[in-house]
Image (cartoon, rainbow, N blue to C red; front, side, top):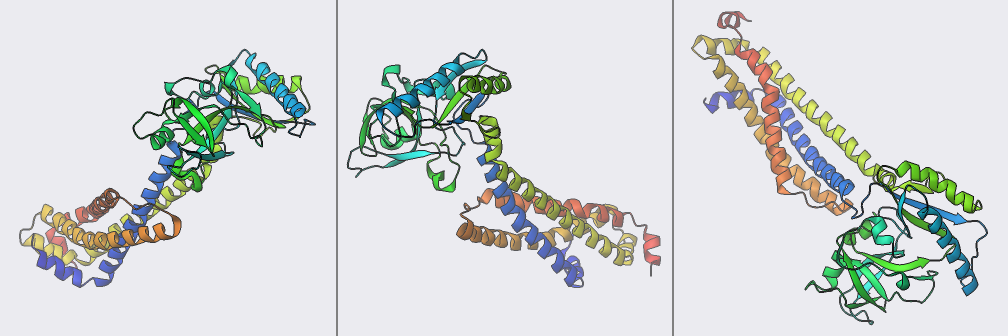
Length: 414
């Protein structure tokens, strides 16, 4: 197949060629970046928390009329209320384990600080989220312990968050341990939490921080378990239901806690909710964005394919006599089919080259204004191949129809 006749025909249809080139270029630029954004959202939604999410429940509640001071009597009263709730929940038949827990992965409320190797905080500084809880916290969350041990009961402190008491021991996530001790020898070492010493007695494989906000995205898995029951008028618990009994525990826990003390606030919408419900709420916007962008991509692809097919059909109608002459001179059906396919490949080739430039430019603009990551070349290459393939698929039907035009009919056409 020679190119000069094809180029000559394209020069006679400059407006149509320009329209298809621009359509392909814009579609490639938008779809390429949109697919990259969708993949980022999907990766974000599906990233593991480090906890065993099935059958894990969070309970948040506030005692009405509970002490509000931080004097010794108030602290003891608040801790007694909390220990009573924990014992009540632990006695439910469908509950496997319970822990005092100020936070839950994805839940939003975060307590954080900085870990260093000296009290002056002049060396390596690692930002981390603090999970306050008791000796049941790690096992209730289902976080995998890869080194060391759990907290012992006699190591658990209880105080308000305003207390100056320091946790003597801590359990850290592996990312924290690796940043503080790159040689992998964190167990048993003393570190400083906001200037206060603590000994690392355990290392867990992974535990996502409670926040999904952008400001915490650089330390998503920097977490520290603290052996502290926080005494406050509001208390939260992590509950591990027996397999398949999550909903039963939700019903039983509310009734049991209200039976112990009906003067408490436990909202229906967020007072008791499973981690799966928390995940669904926190990532709802990400899923919605991915869905909308997916629909936009689909519409653009369909419109582009329809444009290619429609314009090729128009050209076939205009070239019936030319097609007939070629058939009469011995051109086979496959030759006519290949003619239109090569013609489309040339148009699409120009479009994808322009589209790559637009895609990179759009990505740079998004990086500058919306903190988007640099798009990998793999996405650009895949988009180029996809647009070329789309053009071939779209042109096939009208090109096939052109190849089936009988020579005699074609030569008689006006």
